[in-house]
Length: 422
Image (cartoon, rainbow, N blue to C red):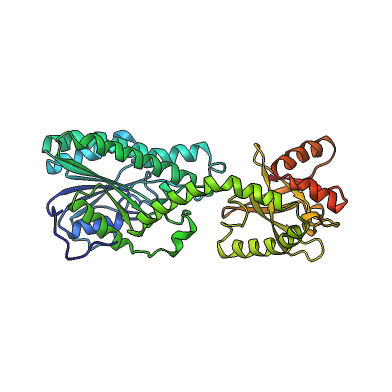
């Protein structure tokens, strides 16, 4: 919830010296403006450590503000370079004689890659900008704030870091979880030290830049970057320990935690019930007609993020090329993820006597695509036979016992394909 104009003024930012890393991207830009409008001296760190950072041609003053506005100073600084970061902080302190507020907003993300798709180099790069830079900044300003008798440290992180489930951007979830844990520990340590230094954690979905939040977040009221910045300034004024922007994120965090616990308790019972029901002929007929249509609709409405079965079993949306029409054909399927990044799928056709059309399509054109949690990758399909098929069949039957019933009712040898990344 955005703070009301009627709330008490608190400690005004006027005249205070504020450092903002990542101050030219995401929430950083409107936040720097809001602080400057409140009378603060704002120093923005921008450089290769910040996503969408300005080039060297951008000089003092926000490039979108009037040239005569000198309340915001933008300096090119690589936050992943500890020496450069510390030198920038020291230079600001030398200019003003103090640093009152540190706001860490620097982050380097690499699309919406999941944990398996993200490279080690991408993970390290994201952690250096998002977490390591926070630690280095805090280590540099703490003694300066202590000697001045107080200050405020603010760490900004999107809400996704708390609700990271399968399919979330792994780098975002990991970095923001680390930032949150570090910030809470720092607050706890400083609380009884008498240092006068406050610590604020800001969780916001406005800085996510397209990274995947749980789909229920799509239905929550949104706020503009300027409104989010005003909420953060309000938190700084009143030295609040944490703030969620929008305020509905607080309820979403709690609801997600409760829902996750409920799913963990019910998942085993639900899965056993489905496996037992799947041996029933009438259930097979109903599911073979209803489930694919429901999954296709969910896939279209959520951009490939949601299928019916993934809450209980690994699933994917397979896109093949029609063997007759030559057009793309989609079908939702259970899958068994392999350690090498490939997936096993079975052409069971819910126990019907004929092979499913998608398996004929793969035999004609092995090149296909799969979508899981909103991420689509190209794959090449291989029909397994001999000992390789026998080993894969044993895996698949353990994974989904009804496959044995499908084989008996169909009267055919169920085709098994391995889908390997192209």
